[in-house]
Image 1 (cartoon, rainbow, N blue to C red):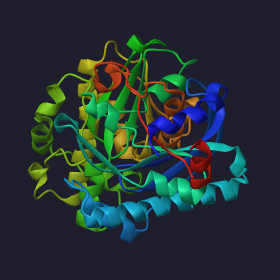
Image 2 (cartoon, helix red, strand yellow; image 1 turned 45 degrees about the horizontal axis):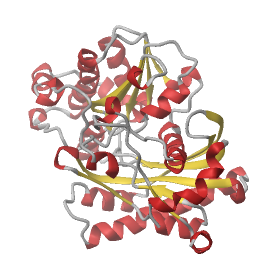
Image 3 (spheres, rainbow, N blue to C red; image 1 turned 120 degrees about the vertical axis):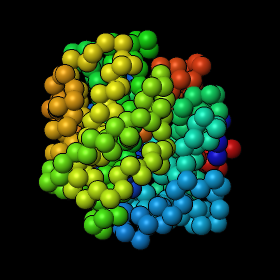
Image 4 (cartoon, helix red, strand yellow; image 1 turned 180 degrees about the vertical axis):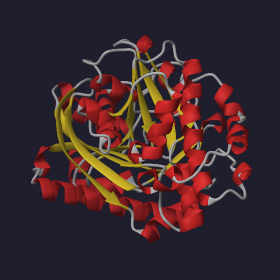
Length: 381
């Protein structure tokens, strides 16, 4: 069932409704799920949230289809497995929180990005929205990025409108830095559409995770301990920062595999981790060149905020206070999942998911595809 079927649900979202968001990030760590009550413009209430790690076999299956130009048979099989993992987290979150299923009006299902090349008009997230709706019994909105990319936008980042909704009472200008697999920043100067700017800054955790995995077999550098034991290799860092991406004006976005790290060859694992942490921090500092005004503070979300070496590097590179989003009572582990719950409700209301200053699209752009569970679909027809 496609976006045209959203009309029967739109009257429900003139008032806040409960929505559940699902996010599987480029860092390949697992799935975040979160409940919020929202009308798609403001957030009335935050509900429970849950994170479940991918099992190692599914993580490797996803890794094997990253960058796939076409959804071949293996990618389709992985998409089903990813969807079933999302079904499981929905059911687990509702059961653990004793949240009534009948109160849940929509699920925002991001899926897992396996390819993002907006300059070529391509973005692919695997996951079956129709199957998720069927197995949960709840309407599902997915495919959040395609409409933006088709209209000439970068298709990312999509979280900035949610950041703005949360930041209504905070001092501005403010920067919200998300450090998932890729880093992205939302600059908020006020409440209007002209007072927001967003773009990918460069690497987040993906390069560090891949380096540590390759050299130690561990999934990531827990608390930045490996990087803290190393020294930054300035020659390798300079080579990484020579990438022309950093001079491009925003809006702009990245695939997790954009950066070539051949300059790191031969470095000890500790020095490599330290250098890549410094690379992420330096790329964020380079983003200052593109902001309308210097932020009064940086709020960091995503897994990178748990990496002490990375947070220390950010504090050294930025001339403003840097703190995890928990310092303003946001939940950094749930923030992106909450955002896709928020965007699902915006989709139902026919509100834009992206703006010229968030993705570079030429005009505010709608997005999302609606899938109704079988009983609802029959009633709608």
